[in-house]
Length: 161
Image (tube, rainbow, N blue to C red; front, side, top):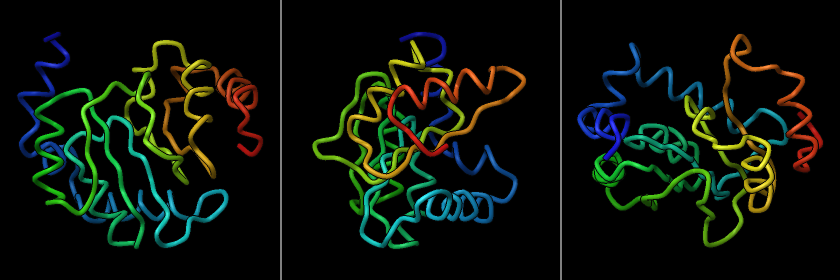
């Protein structure tokens, strides 16, 4: 286990509650943005959450009528997400660079984790292969050249950014 994996393993219990001051409001807002930014999602469509942590976002997406599939590279986070979501969603162990869902998804999200992409352009192309409607992620524009990221997204097939 790497030191980063060990850090997440130790923090798995209570990750969401410890990470946000107002968990409900923050995740409800994030879920709303996922649903309405770009082409809107419809009830019943699936959102794949890469680097899902303990699945906190899953609760907010399920409450909006969306289906949720979470993936995280840390076993303890996956276990916490499964407990949190209590069978209402699929949660799997996997690396965001390599994971592909069993069927296409409407949207893919990557929050607070885009820096885990080994090679960002290849990651975007990989995600484009199974994402039908949109990719939603965050990044710090002080750390990334935004126009380069846009260019990589366009090259991967994401026409509307």
